[in-house]
Image (cartoon, rainbow, N blue to C red; front, side):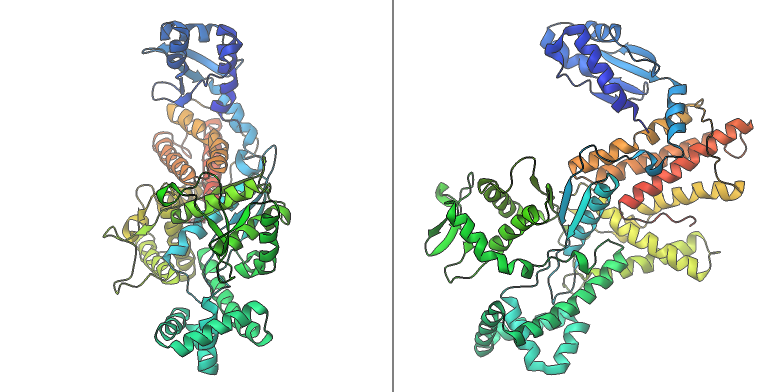
Length: 575
């Protein structure tokens, strides 16, 4: 499926070179959808300044040297120098017909596939997942799906917090409570962790035992490791239940916790010392990556070995980036981590560059994101002021969705209603997260996200189900090899929207911004509704027109389902 914007970019660039010479080969034609034609070219305005000519004269010369083959029906110079472009209807029809039976509805493999390592979700062992874990998990899963659709090798890395100082107090608390505490650690992770923390803060003897237990854990004491594994295993089972409910592609095979890198920490420091990057500073071992300053404009240290000889997050992250490059052979490393970690990750990336580990074409990128806010504009919490458990939030969304689905379609049986409610509730939560620019905070609002109106998952799911209902009424699927015909303006608008899908997916791959796909799908759904209301499908004037409109409808449903799938959202056949 060929997006006309993509196909015409080189055509107009060639016309600019033909008109004004090779010195202007860098000019971006700037094709944009337009209300006055199919597309508008905005290049003439900027080019006129460089040439010191009138924009309309520049536009006329571009059109004069245009060789567009059979794609363009008409060009018109408008305003101060815009070029309005209308695509030939038979060209659009041919592009759509060619893709009707193609897999992937036009999304094709990248020419140079990467090995993409994605670090996301990353909850802490012995703590329940909360709303703060949600964004990393949802955004990371969507990006993984997009990269897989584009033919890249995707390696998921769930960087569990399963190592370090807190495990001393957790293991000691487990020992103090015996079998009852062990069961408690499984059934209520939050309460177990809170009780251990209170004991650690209020009982000096317990705190001393906890610190000694950390040393035993790091030294590999068998009994301590056995207790540690019980905590980790209990947490893994809990995480698996949340991932299953959320419908994300994470399982135990993707877990690469902090403990994985423990054997690599000393050698990582040694390598950095050997090349002169890691140096002693005030009793600690530090790297001072270029470009980072602290107070008084002093170089900012990345501490990779503490004064007491212990290791911190920076050490683990340096070992992890080394592992992902050398062991996993990653060529594009994505870290789906909240914005507060921006400076830390930038320092880690810079250190890896200075060490010669992260060199082009290898690259590491921080996929940062904002916070989830409540209606009061503050961090989203329960009424009691506690951090909201993710599983409670998801179950509440499904419960509310079932009430909405029941009101919308009371004739559904209980099994259908439950399945659709799950798809709608979970889809609504995911879409609310993904549809806003990820770097911004967004307000969590059940009523808005579960609405069947506006830019929401239920609206898109309903649009898909409504299209599929056309074929249930027709009693047949759209026939393959249909001769698509583009006559009405609404058919043209829908054709252009459908052909843009592969370009949008590639844009998400490049920019790491899933909200661009959400915006596209919403525009596609509204464009289809305009087509459906204006162009009769089953009651078309001729059989050829009916077949063409069925093909347009079928392709619209498939693109909607494909796009929702890339976001990790189901597209029910009926609602």
